[in-house]
Length: 305
Image (cartoon, rainbow, N blue to C red; front, side):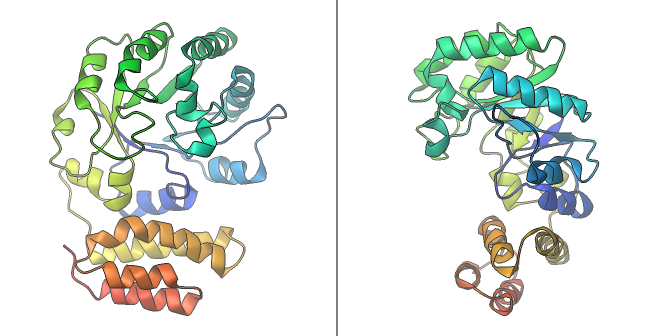
């Protein structure tokens, strides 16, 4: 049976979002947490522990961002000690501050170093369930074949392929033909990630698991709808956003950082309302709790699309 994954999105799909999403919408088989970055003294920080360990999330997969095998090995061992069965290696993040340090999709620039890193990881963690999330190249899709040949050498639990290059960031269309060719020639399961925004997407008929990030952030009922459920109603969106707001108030130090986090949430959610532009602008400009709540109230006065 096809499994549906929530993609890791820094600043969006954190513990607070996941908790609210499970309660209101569901439909997600596995949530992947936003990445943690280990160093030579790898111990989960207080923030990381709160994010990954403060609640027992049976279907949570932690993700590690690093360009060094020794850092990943330290992190993976600690996470496995905490009971996580699968650890994901992030080789897909396109952020310039990440790739400049040869992390995320920056690791795809040097295939020899990528091969060495994976060799050391799998040699040091025999039998561990390690998955990889990747882009299909850095500058060009022409790089993909060589990258894929390296992945095929190792016993990955799965390979999550977002078939864009790093240079594309999130622009253009993901190349689904690249994914289909790889899926048909892979010695491990491939999970598709990219441009899934509707329950009518043909990918839901494919014989593989799927992952959605921006599509699920924009329509939190997306996977529920794909499984035959209802679309999100105003009452659910209100409960969802309120749970997230209260969750941030619990963890964030003051109203200002809470409002900043909520602005990111509404950047994805507000287009579900007809004529959302003016209320979203007001949310974006809000500096106080009263200003924020007034702007959100004006948004919910609008009809859903």
